[in-house]
Image (cartoon, rainbow, N blue to C red; front, side, top):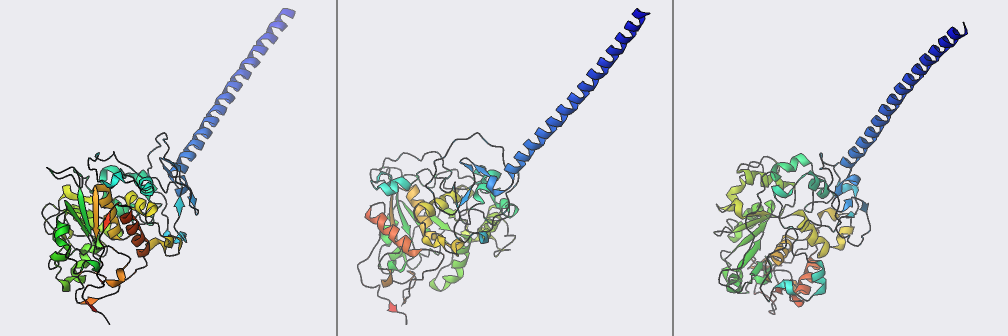
Length: 436
């Protein structure tokens, strides 16, 4: 009897132990599943947080942070490649900032392979000017094209106002033109065959200081001649020359010159055989223009809707000789050389260097020696606003979107440091009648 009771209790205990072990195992599995799901949800939340919101967008330099006090530029740090941005960041509005916002990656720029080593003893790259050497980036990325642009770049550049970035723009409104911007298959300039290895350039502005200057022959003697905006030469060859190697423009300048300068004989933008065209992407209208130009069709939207851009290049447009300046290059010029105090004012979004300044710096980055003609000088009041104004003497107009005083002082400094040669005159006037 006792043995049977013991056997019965023993069987019961085994059953109870088996039930307890089974329940414990089930609870353990449920707990592990819940914990895994919770970790997964947290990780997914972190990833989503990195893909949205401007404060979490990343560049090679780390997280983006906004500050309204200017800090010393930070050196670029190597980081583990981050997951590619999949969607555009929320649009930033210029109206959200009362002055130029400064980010912790403000002074970090895309750079390309080092440029050709120069054999020119007179090259501006050999300057002893410490301030210029400190700020000058010989391999700054000059051009924007479809192969060096992606969503991560869009999000980074969306922190800067135009023409330095895409603040306030919608991704879908701009990307249509980016898909077609060609990668330049040749450098902008190369040394002339049989020469001494130096690339000698003239950059010709539109200032009235050239009226009656008789500098045309000297200008044309350079290896390359840069011009910009309403670069009219016919009828003014004696003063400004007639060669154009590189024409820098915006959609506005290449179209508006046709009616603004018509009375001075202007008929078309420069179109020398083999000329190279460079676009400054200053506004949405330029991207709309580019889309039509690159697709060889009419502009589909904006102020130039239904216009055919290629007609403005007189048959000289060629994809292999067409360039679009990179936003980093434009911002670098502003930040390191032409940072106006007006950027701290409420109208900061419209403040930027002139097209002439952008052109001059493009020459400084692609030439060995640069001679600047028709740029503002200290005695600008002696001359008309434009060299085409032969019959009257107009006043130089200082528009709010450009800091002419700053540019004037920088050109003077560069001239004195022999970084470039600035054309100046000693004559008291140009022989024109003063406009009453």
